[in-house]
Image (cartoon, rainbow, N blue to C red; front, side, top):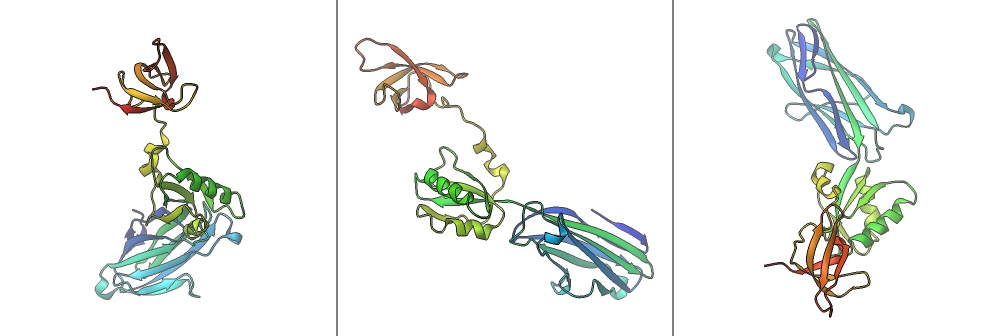
Length: 276
């Protein structure tokens, strides 16, 4: 909560800065209380970090009924406020992040309310951050779609920051960028890409995909496996020993005339039958 008041005029609310994605809205709720029945709100709106090349943010103040009281597109930077019976009045400040915003673009708003009883100030701010969207793909074509998107990311404006296709996640690719409309545009001519899942995700929701998974996880001694690469590709073997630290397993080929232990990487086998 941020509240700086002098005398009998007080602005009370959350204030502070919020992260906001391109094309989305940040909202703050606050109240104004005063011993006076009238007050004047003054608005100071600044953009950065490069104010000469900053996109245009839409800043609007609403009352508790949803009626617009002030917008930064108006010519005046102040608004007369009535406080019937000297009762506190509720407001909502809404900031829309431009769709063309770049990472780190920001807007800062300072509202100062003055009356015969004194002054009070609240400060607000919004900072543009990237979006992480989930793209549906044709099944088992995740890598193909990811490669196509990365090729597009190297051309023209850098709308795509990263593409992530986690092993084991079929039919979906994560795409990171600023402008969600442009992200959708980039995928329209990729045949194996489908559509984006509604809404966005965040790094916390996909963090478990970012942690490397051991290649031998889920494999136990006695499992029957198929070797899927190397000189014994296609052979069936039984797991004899597992080295967790090296992510290697020692197997014995089923059809070999003389049982010979063979050590391979955990990702070189496919489990076809679990040990009973």
